[in-house]
Image 1: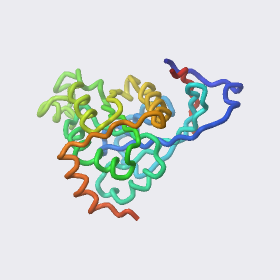
Image 2: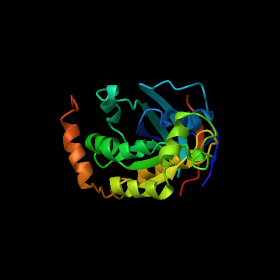
Image 3: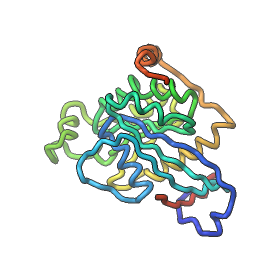
Image 4: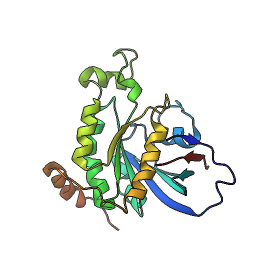
Length: 235
């Protein structure tokens, strides 16, 4: 499976539309992941929280031309009432955490998985660990907040990501580095695959007692009320 540019002739076909939403803690790498995929660039301009942003990218996957809408959301608690509007008609969700911040993985279990299941039901979820390049970083290389977290707890291990993915009923656990462009395209190919496979087979949704309790608590808080062109051979 690989990616390449779509020719003009290839693009003359019926188009299907799919929607992907990315959620996770603030500063966990959601925006950088999307920028690397859509624009093939990585910016280190300092952190500016995203409130709400949408990009549309076009993929040719398994004989389908797919218009994929990418919704970048805010992870801060102050935007909890706005974020649910992003979930309407979602086809697949990337739940993101940062490998250099174990707390962000814990928040997947306590916050993000319950929220996504509450608003999106059985929509396919892919758990994504970002900043995988920092796992092998020598502690003390710099004085960043990330280094302090590594000193205190150590980076998240791959097996822990897999364990949480099983716990929340994610279809897959994947890792990436937007900075080094590792694993980024594979994540979005997998997301498209999940969209098409959803109609064939529902992913069994498993919830731990802890997550169920969290859903009950969070239900009380919720008010219910470009273009980059890529080609995938698919499978």
